Length: 486
Ligand code: GLN
Image (cartoon, rainbow, N blue to C red; front, top):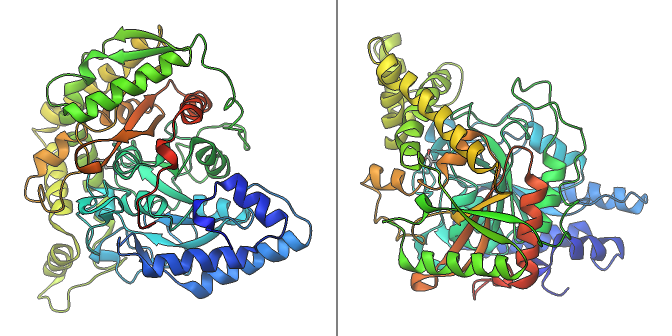
C-alpha cells in the first residue's frame, strides 16, 4: 500500500471505494505510525476498539453504502468524551475516567462511518497555548522535537502534521484550534460559536468553547466540519441551523472581487519579523488571486487579553466545581473530614495552571470584585464584537497572523503564564466575538518552524473562509509539506 498518510480524504475515499485498501488496512497503517511516533500526540490508543470500528465500516462499504468519511480514520481531542477510550481532558483528575456516553461530535462522526484512532493529548482542561500543561506530558512539534506543538489542541495538530491521522477534532476557546494548527503547519477551522454541539465536550469556558476541525487542507476540513456541525437539542447554545451543511460548497469560487481587511493592530510591535514576512507574502498571494486589500482597524484588540483572562477563568471556576472528589475522578487517599477531602482531592487532581485559573475566576466573581472585573470584561467583550461588525461592513474576510511568533522551545515559557497569555493576542478577539476563524499554512520561519495565516469571517461565513483557504492552497504548497520523518 502506498503511503496512505500522505493522501487527502478524497484520495482515501477513492481508494476505499475502489477497494484498493480496506478501512481495516487503513486503520492498521495509522495505528502502526502512532505506535512508532515520538510526538506524545496520543493519550489513549486501543487498537482493538479502532479495528472493530474499521471492520464495521468495511461491512457498510461492502453493503454498498457510500459516504464521505466512511472508513476514514481520525483522532479525537481528549476533551470529547468517548465510550471505550478514556476521557481525561489532559488532567490527573480524570486519569482513569471512562465516559458512559459519547460526545455529540463523537457520535456524529461514528454515524458518518469515520474510524476513531484514539484520544489526543491536550492542555489540562484545554487551558494553555503550548500544550505543556498536560498531566501526560507535552506534545512535541513534528517539525522540531524541541518545539511546542501549540495549544491546547497540540495532540490533534501534531497527529495530522506527523501523518498519524488524516483528520482530527479539536476545540477552540480562545485559539486552541488555530494556534496549534499554525505551529504544526496544518489547516484548522473554528466555526461560529454554536455550530458544533458542546454536548459531551468537557467544559472549560462555556460561552467560548467551540469544537473545530483540523486536517492537512481546507477541503478536508470542510468534509470533517460537515459531519461535526449541526443543531443539537442537548446543547442549549446550539444554533438552529440546517442539520446537514455543505461547508465545501464555495471551495472552487474564484477570489476576484473578494475584499480582504488587514487590521493595523495585528501588525504592530511584538510581531516577529519572520511571521510578518510570511503573512505579507500570503496577503500578496491573495491579491494575486484577485482579492482587494483594505486597511482596517480593530481598535480594542489589546483589550482582548484582559477581557478573556477574566471571563474564561470565571466560567472555568464554575465549570470545574463539579470535580470535587465525589462525583468524578481523583479522590485523595487520606483526609480528615469532608472539606479536607475536597481540598486535597482538588489540590492533587488539578495542575498549576488549572488551579491558578480557578483562583482568578473565583476572585473576579466574588462580592465586591464582580462589578470591577467580571462586568467590565463583559462590556469589553461587547465592544470587541462591535469592532468586528464595523470592520466586516466593508470587507468579506479579515486576514492576519495567528500567533506573533513561531512555536517556542519546550520549557522556555513554562514558568511564565503571562507570556503564554500574550501569545493569544490575535486569536482571542474572534473567540470573544463568537466569529469563525481559520489557520492556513503560510510558510516557515525561524528554525524551519511553521507559520499560519489567520482568516476571520462574519457569523456563518465558514464556507467563505474555506473557499479563501482552498484557493490559497491551489496556488501554494505549504499545506502539502510534511516533516522529514513523517
Ligand atoms: N490559550 C488560551 C487559554 O489558555 C486558549 C485555550 C483554548 O482555546 N482552549 O485559555
